[in-house]
Length: 212
Image 1: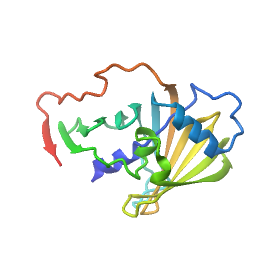
Image 2: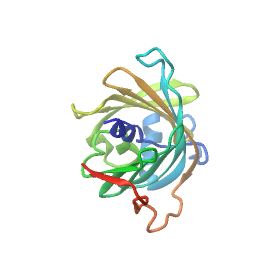
Image 3: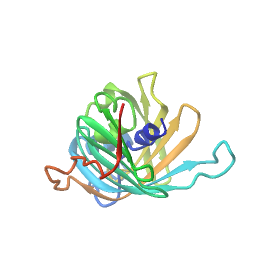
Image 4: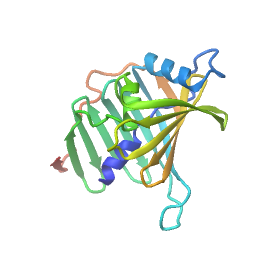
């Protein structure tokens, strides 16, 4: 369950290296739809931080790493700090590799993206089938968009996306327990050239494989 929660957090888009000219002040919904329609693949870096304190009263340490994706359903989401973990999908199967445990968990991708935040970055362009989208105003130098999952069995109540110059620069994920995590994106490269075998997963030597 912990690994799947991290997968849901990996629903992401990134920022700053590319901008759509003339869109700095455009409404968030227009910016977002233009971005999704014109971005079939991307790569970049991220940081992830829980806002506020955990139930234990302590601040949760930030995570960071990198990602690459190609629509629909192909991605590599790599946590590098404070621990190493890889979430990778080849369009059919999701692989979750925990380096410390030297264990790979696999599951059919199927409709797993669905109404999760991952659908925004890795899924198809038919976002409004799974989300209700609405404007959320300006703050922190960005125009914000709220995406509310239509499905009732999702782990998230609401996903907020902050955009600037036509590119998502941040996402805030509010889960059903009332906790909010913020993802910030940097070094975004839109539609890079990717190798044909880019998303083929190779099980590390000696790793245990668990099929779910």
